[in-house]
Amino acid sequence: MRKRLTAGTVALTAALFAATAFASPALRLGPATHGTFALYKGYYDGHKDGYVITDVSSKSQASAWHVNFAPVLKSAKAAPPQYFVTGRAAAGQIAVFGSEPGESSYNPLWDELVVTWKAGVTPVLLTKDDQITSLQKAGKLTIADPHIVLNAPITSIGSKSTVG
Image (tube, rainbow, N blue to C red; front, side, top):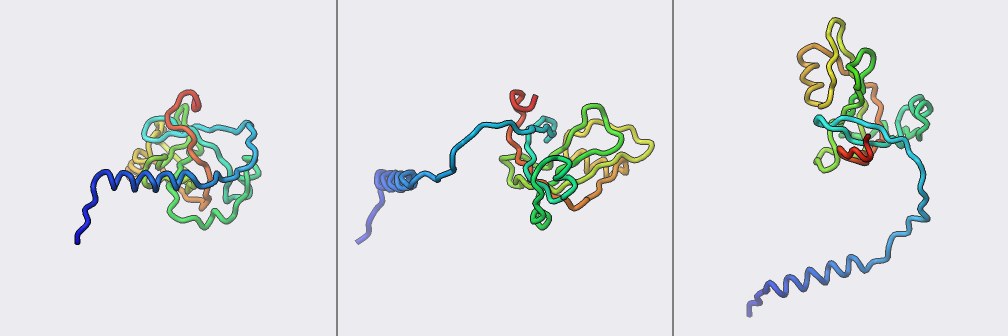
């Protein structure tokens, strides 16, 4: 004898599964307090995102930035790039992300890459990762990898209220 599932049976089963999932006890996170964090700005695809830095795999950067030194981050694989321009730069230059929340490549760990303009090249404002790699291929800038990984979650996407 064959049994047929009706739409009502499927909906009832889904509702029971959902109720069971929400019936589990809440996770005990501990008491919440509100404090102040340094919120930085970075570009992604032409708009500004806000981010916080919590940990870094470089002891000297951790000390300079007053964040946690986390040497285990150095072994993280597949972290998207975060570009930092050193030396000459266009006015208003800030970090540039290679991904953001909602994209399949996003995670809060970043492979820190250092961008330097070549001599004789006039810096332009860098706002996209593709722009940076294109200018590198054109021989206008260099990208160095100091093998440093940051834990810097993006906390706001293009929101003027939190990015400024």
